[in-house]
Image 1 (spheres, rainbow, N blue to C red):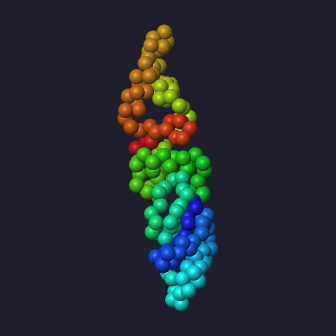
Image 2 (cartoon, helix red, strand yellow):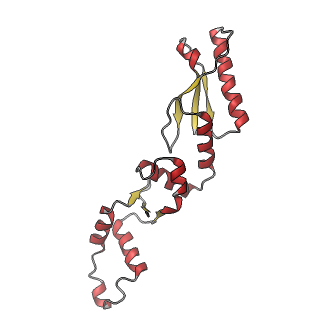
Image 3 (cartoon, one colour):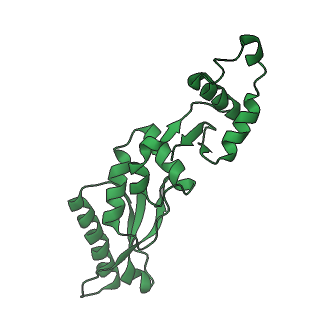
Length: 176
């Protein structure tokens, strides 16, 4: 996550004073970074009084939208949590957020074990795996098992709304 931190008072006086910062960073470094931008704003505005307000005029983030007045401390905490996740866990979080399964990153992280990667691109392959794992056709004669319609079962599974595709077109299942 990257954010462009801007001095609000300098901005309101016609000066764009700010810089890009990569999150997460230590709390001390974050406070120092904010103070540096506010000091630059005071210098540009030739202001004797203390500039205290800042906002994010731009951002780069794959997993959430950022409001311009979002707390940088909160954003830093979120970035720390996301950085600690494995790549597959990050994908699960992003899918839950993109598909409005959860309302926040914290809720997505709490539900990470409920988002399962199927490693399949076709829903009928998911249906086949489900039937094989469940043993649902075990009692049926082997020569009749080939007539089972995995595509139809896959369509029905997909209609339930629990499957989502990632950027690589792989299906993920959210288990409620």
